Length: 117
Image 1: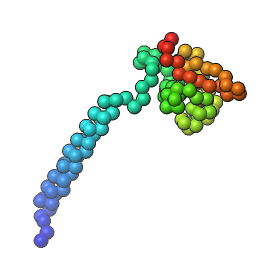
Image 2: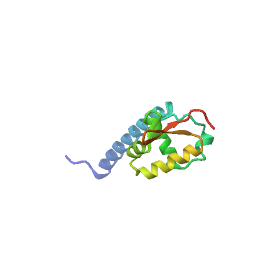
Image 3: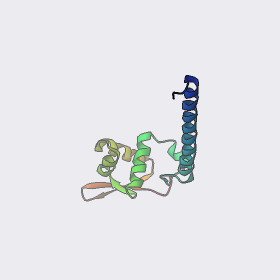
Image 4: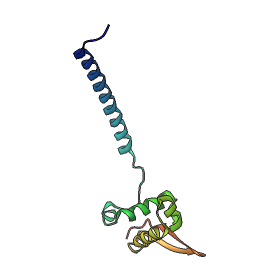
């Protein structure tokens, strides 16, 4: 027995609406999880972070993920950018006082500076 066209459309519509409601519930759960605890917690105030470029914030996050200490090569590999770009951004945040820079033999190492400027 085949269903009439309007009845079939109603059943399909109800199925679609139930699925939409299920997705909404899942999204609400994910939002609560994401807002409950930040994924990365940089030790700087939002006022300072607002003055940085996206690339500079990315290198700070990469430094945090790498344990707070890394070379430009390590940061570049993590971010998928070239070393020169990573070095340039790291030098920029060093000038802003957000990271310390030191040399270990031939490698320049950057460390997060937890004391804000």
